[in-house]
Length: 342
Ligand code: AQP
Image (tube, rainbow, N blue to C red):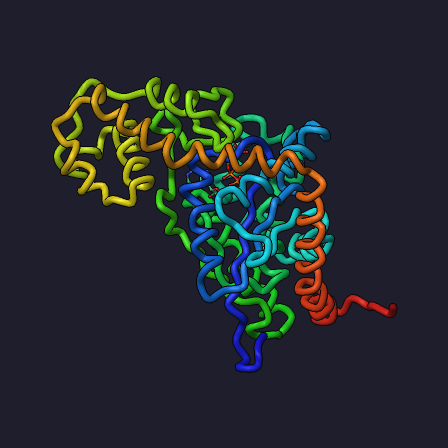
């Protein structure tokens, strides 16, 4: 808490280093991270590697993916001088508070989480315990900094509601009103739910087996253009207004991407493109996507040429993050009654 007795305006958000960052992560989350870095907030952005290992990760690839994600963050505009950039496993307080929250959260609450059901499908029995308790660790990631605001895509809304439930239960159980803040989700990225380019009913995702389903930020200009050209569409021309997109998920997705990348409203995009065929619209979308996304890969490759510098930035970020988190964890232990004598 600050001198005024309120929580410092602090942003925390994380992305899993579980594969290439894609356009959905960028438009749903990272673009907003960059804007919030320039606003009146302390900002912490984390590569949540402990979340990534809730499903199998090849160890060498995980290390590389963590550096790639750090490079992607910086190439998108996150500045380690303005924001704290770090990977989760270097700050052990996340896991320590996560355990306490495993004891505060209820099994019934976790049973309602749709992301676990989506990821586990019919194989719930074979999933790791970590995947099931993912949301309690996510609550710890946020609350170990007393973060007040969390920018995320729409798919994370339910996890943030759980974070608030855990904060409130902790504050009630241990009679410490206001100790953990009621964190506010910021679901207002340029496009909060970008869908797969191959199936407009599925979200664009790192783990989709088809690389054609997503635009990776590391993709070359040629690949970006090819993926837009091959994106699934329907045979109708684009409608004149947003209502006409209601039953057309693929068209809605491509128009949404155009709108987010150009900064124009969906109605403005349809004002220009309504009545035209995808044969005309797709080349324009490909050009716009290449213009906006391809420079990110160029900068990422430049940063990745010096992995030692990336490691230095993450180490420095972890030290700065730990300075905020450790006193909050120490106070949490006191509330719970856990003895600390050293
Ligand atoms: N398709 C999307 N549209 C908008 N926002 C999205 N986000 C993810 N996909 C979309 C947002 O990106 C942030 C980081 O996500 P994450 O990597 O931590 O986890 P995720 O949501 O599980 O992402 P993926 O791509 O779907 O990864 P896999 O396939 O590994 O599960 C979050 O703020 C998320 O909302």
